[in-house]
Image 1 (cartoon, helix red, strand yellow):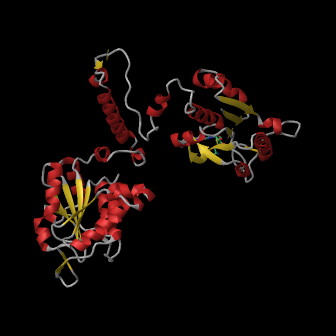
Image 2 (image 1 turned 30 degrees about the horizontal axis):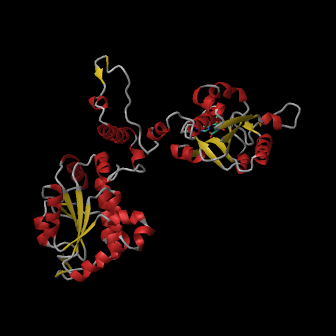
Image 3 (image 1 turned 90 degrees about the vertical axis):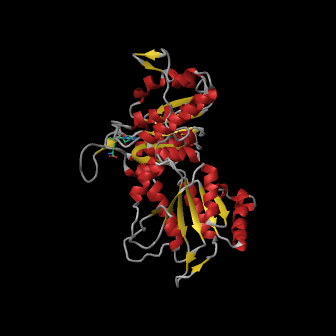
Length: 425
Ligand SMILES: C[S@@+](CC[C@H](N)C(=O)[O-])C[C@H]1O[C@@H](n2cnc3c(N)ncnc32)[C@H](O)[C@@H]1O
C-alpha cells in the first residue's frame, strides 16, 4: 500500500483525475491511498494568507514558508518514513527509473507550488525536488498527478496484466514498438504480416527491432543507457561493418627506427577492451609473437574472465571477453575471415600527421555504407612499420589536439578514434 499525500492549495483539482479508471480502481482495491492537505489549514492569521510579495521586487507572488513547512512537519510526524518531494521545474527530471524507485515507497508526499513558486527556504524541509519536464506549469498539481499516475501503475496488482508495464516505453530504456488492433486493413494500410503469423518468436524479434529502430530515430539520447546486444548497438548506430581492433606489439619501430617487439601492458589490455566494449567493437586482438608475453596477457585476462575478478567485477569480465591473443597480423586476418566470411579492410593509425590520409568523417561514412569488416590497427613503441602501412587499405588521419604536444598513449588514442568513428554525434 502506497500512501500519497498531496499538499495543495487546490484540492478540488484532484477530484476528477483520481476518480476514474486505474487510479480509482487502485484506491478501491486498497493498493494506494491519496490524502489531500491544504496549506491554508496551517495558516495562523485571520485571512489564511499563503502567499506574499517577492523580496527584491518582480512579478507575481511567492508561497510563504510557514504554512507549507507546518503542513510538511505535521505529515512527517504522522508518517515519519514518508519521502517528501517538492514539484519544481528546477528539480531532477522525473523518469521511468524514478517512478520505479518511488513505487517501492510506503509514503510519498507531493508538495505543489503555485504562483511564482515557493519560498527558497521550504526546500530545506523536503527530501528532493522533481520536475516533470522542461516547461513551466502554472502549478505543481498537474505534475503531482503525473507522478501519482506513473508510480501507481507500477505497483503490483494495479494493472490487470503485470507484463504490460514491463513492455511499455522506457521500461527497458527503449520506446515501445508500434501497436495495431482490428481491422486488419484500415484505409488501405495493412497490419504488418508478422503480427498475424502467430509465430511468437518472430513477433518478439520484430517488436524488439522496431523498438530499437524507433528509439534510434526519435530518442537517440535514450540508447546510451538501454541494454542492447552488440549487434543491436551496431545496428542502432547505423554502422553496417563489424569493426575489430588490433594492438600490434610487433613489428613496430623503437626510438632509433629499429624494428622491435614491445611489452604487453595490463593497462592497454584493460582500457582498450573497456572502450571497445563501450563502442561496440567486435574483437580486440593483442598481437605479439613472444610466448612469455602471450602468457602474461592470458593470465591478466583469465583473472578477470575466470578467476577472482570475474565475480568481483562482471562488467570488466564483459569487456575482457573481447580480447583475443594472436602471434601475427596474418593470424588476426584469418580469424576475422573465419568469423565474418570475408577479409577485413585494414585501417592503420599513426600519430604523425601528413601523407595521404583518410579523414575520420570519410571513414565513418564508409562504415555506414560498407558491410565488409574493418580492422583498425594500433601501433605501440614508436609506431607501426612501413611494411604494415604498405599492406593497409586506409591510413587514418592523425588525432590532433589543440597544442603541439603529440604523445597520446595508445589506449587514449584508441578511445578517441572509437568515439570519432562510432560515437553518437
Ligand atoms: C509558475 S511555476 C513557478 C516557476 C518558477 N518561477 C521558475 O521559473 O522556476 C509554479 C509551480 O508550478 C510547479 N511546476 C511548474 N513547472 C513544473 C515542472 N516542469 N515540473 C514540476 N513542477 C512544476 C512548481 O510547483 C512551481 O512552484
